Length: 274
Length: 219
Image (tube, rainbow over all chains, first blue to last red; front, side, top):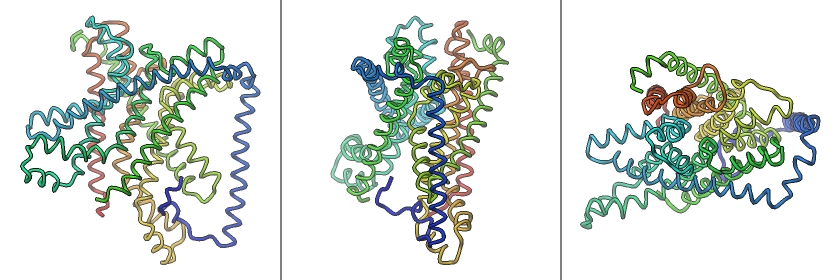
């Protein structure tokens, strides 16, 4: 993963001499053999237990399989997008509370941020799955997954936004005020738009966590990727292959989100000189 | 249920659950830290296959959802004749994921060291192990105190996965789901667990800040 910049990782060694080069080459050969043996052992395990049988894999050649998994993926993305939207809105207001001049409000918002950051998502999900219905409130499965996931993300979003606001130079506020702008419009028109730009990479990274948390949708029976994978498993009686493919889909999705975040951060470093 | 009723009936279980969550967190964090260091060593080693393997490891485990990994360990591995206990599965899942993040933080810590420092150390005649021991590792560790504190909290949150398998004694999340499926535990049952998690997280955070203030390198 070269970023083109020389980092300490590449600097740890000096240019190797002939002796070291030989050692490196030998160890490379040994490690290559060891890794190959590991891979072979895994594949053999699959073979020996009959998991390489075509019946477990051929249905991935059918369009219906992929359209069904795709539907689940769309469910995942919808829940994640809604959770992200709620978390962003709630995080925005929590952030406003944390930087407000009113002590009580500041304390309350700090406590809320700490609370949402210190409690596992699963506990929030169980709250909406088991406790909320005890009050006779009926909710769609979609909300039962997206709201708790949003709650557990909003504290982090608030902190990320706050760090962005703090990163905007003070001179910006002073200049806007000296132009006669009011406090609120200074914040909304000058400070916040710049703050958002600083923190877009961190917000995307948080979106990865939101996507991961939506996998608990099976708890509330929401048809996301994981839930649809379960249906496929009972249809084709193929557990291992389906779960492996599902895991790979999740990994790729989050990998590309992370990549996007890194790419935007790198671009900002080039274009936004402090 | 009122709080006194809850504590009378489930007080002991709450204590057991808190201890279970703490135990899981401690075991998993230790395992994640050791694994993270090993993987980081592979990632900075000059052996290309090992570098690629370790990079792949990190990408897999930092991007896989916890539920997905746990389900693979619990339900898929038996098809390969690998039978692990529920406790092992939870511990594995809650160690592998944080280990990838641990390695990422350590790499970031290494990358904060200016390349000039390593050149300087080398020109002073230090050998590679000496450079690692005296220049790289101390600085990398000192600048990763806060990330590692966050990792400890994240590990604790990940151990909530234990509620997805039948485990005895239950963890804090599992207990809430147990109480609420057997009785009307209400908001209180949830709040007790939540505040126990939260208090632990706050204490971890405070200790982390304290250590960080002591060892941070002011640049």
